[in-house]
Image (cartoon, rainbow, N blue to C red; front, side, top):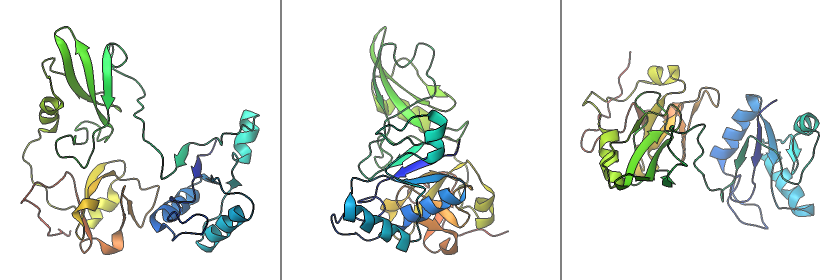
Length: 265
C-alpha cells in the first residue's frame, strides 16, 4: 500500500493568514512534490470548508501542487481497510501545530516502561542537551531516559533504531551521559565535497547554513526525496548553492574549527 501524507494548509503549506491565503511555504511544497513523484499519495488535510476550501485548492494548484484526496483517506486506503473513518488515515501528518512524540520500535530488556520515569527527546538547539547521531547506525533518534534504579534516580541515553546506549548506572544528571555519548575521536572534519554528498543515502550529516547559523542542523540524507538538494528542519539546501550558502560535514564543526574550504576531487 502506497505511502499517504496528510498535509495541513494554513501555517504549513503557506503562512497563516486565515481566512485569506498566506504566502506559499516553498520548502514544504517542494518536499510534497518530491514525495508525490516518489509515489506517495497527498491529502489536503484542513479545517477549511465551502468557498474557503475551494480557495485553498486553487492556491495549491497555482503553486503546482495537486492532491490525490481532499479531507479524506486515499481511495486505495479506503478500499484496503474497508472503512472510511472521520480521522484521515495517513503514514505521515504534516502540520505546523504538530507535536513530535518519541516512539520506538522496541526498548531495552527491562528498560523503558519498567521503572522508567521520563523519556526525553533532546533539544538539538540546546548545547547542554544535544546528543550526536548514533556512531553505529547513524540515526539521529537518540533519547534521554530518567529512570528509578536500585540506588535511586538515574539517567541513560540510547538510540531508538539500533539500541546502542550509555547507561553507567551512576549518572544522576543528563549531562553525565551526554558527555559520555558525545565523546568522539578528534578526527579531521573538512566539509564534504558535493560529489561525496550526492553519493550518500541514509547517512547523517551536519548542514551548516553560512548566512544564518541558527538554521544549521543535523539531517539524514535521503536521495529518494529530492535529487536537487536536501530538506533540513529549517531550510531547503539546494545543491546549486553548495559552498556559497551552506556546507555539509560528517559531524558538527567545533567552535573555531570550521574549515569552510570545499574540497574537490
